[in-house]
Image 1 (tube, one colour):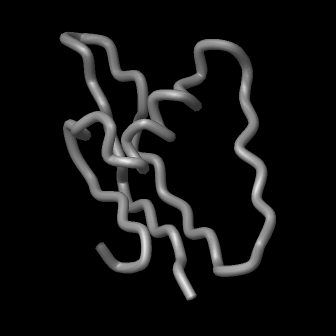
Image 2: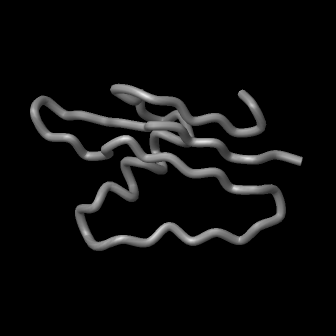
Image 3: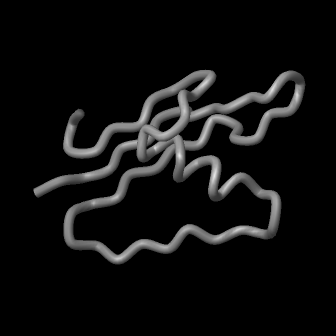
Amino acid sequence: MTSIDVHELTKEYGTTRAVDRLSFRVQPGRVTGFLGPNGAGKSTAMRLVLGLDRPTGGSATIGGK
């Protein structure tokens, strides 16, 4: 089964840090929420995890890829 591993994920836009060293792991078969206030970087983080944007630092893998 596939897991999601995020390690020290960071995204900067100029001098603005939208995602700051985010780390988490989602185990296969688990229902997981991703909560935060408006502007907290949730959408940016998900775009990084899905490979739709490039991180400034860190890594995100799905199933080891």
